[in-house]
View 1: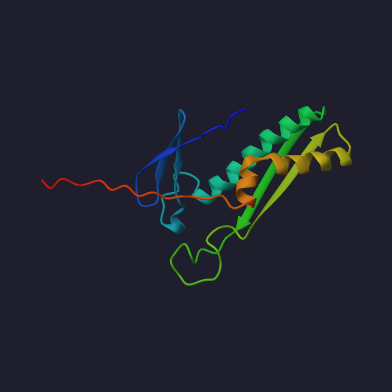
View 2: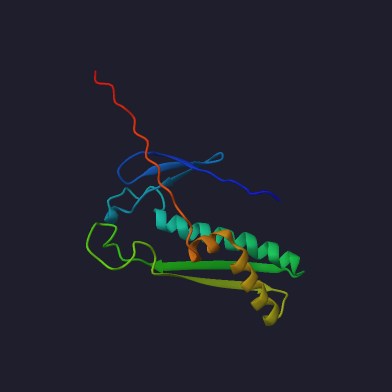
Length: 151
């Protein structure tokens, strides 16, 4: 199979809010009032956790099917802490992102513990979002400017 390419596009609606298009979907990214937003959508780091849960869910069901067992129910919870000092331009040695992300996977399945342990290891290993979070992924920012015509 050849590489798959995904892309999104966003247009700023305010200093804290952006509307992002992904295929035929529009997602609102905003901050809570305590961080200067209007709370009209999850913030970027909440979407990061959401993306991880979405990926783990898809991989969990795919791999369970490959391993020939049934998932009766699956709940996944994720949390992480970050130090907002760098975000707000304060001097800190902490990185800007999460210090760690903790994921709790609660599964009811017709499989024994050894099978579920193997399943979870494969889920983590094969989830692209988990891979992006666990490994350095180059990010390149390119700047384009638009000239404003004086009226």
